[in-house]
Image 1 (cartoon, rainbow, N blue to C red):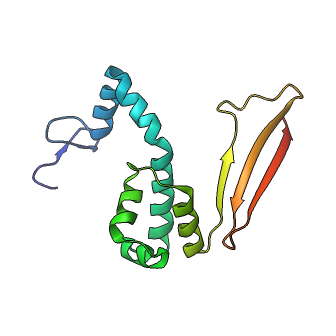
Image 2: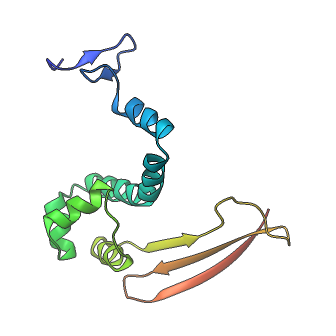
Length: 142
């Protein structure tokens, strides 16, 4: 065990000051509307970062490897993977192309409530590596 790590009775690592980062974040969120708004603003970028990190590590790629494939800098990949910075769709499209993936962006209602006709509507855009974008409108019976 590291000299600065304290183990709780549940065998969960706790910071030297007695609370986990997750507990601290929950306390800050409970106290601060500004903190909650910032977490909500960054949620999309954190999700993108998580997906990219998982793909990259599962395929044995380093950040430098990914940067080289995309034609960008290691620091740009690092910023994107931090989940703390917004990126643009063109950058995401270049990453997808470099990895042989399809970029899909889905717009849907925040709450999946059916439309008046009883169906759930979703608008999807797929950016293929050859540059075409296709729009699909699907309607599913609720």
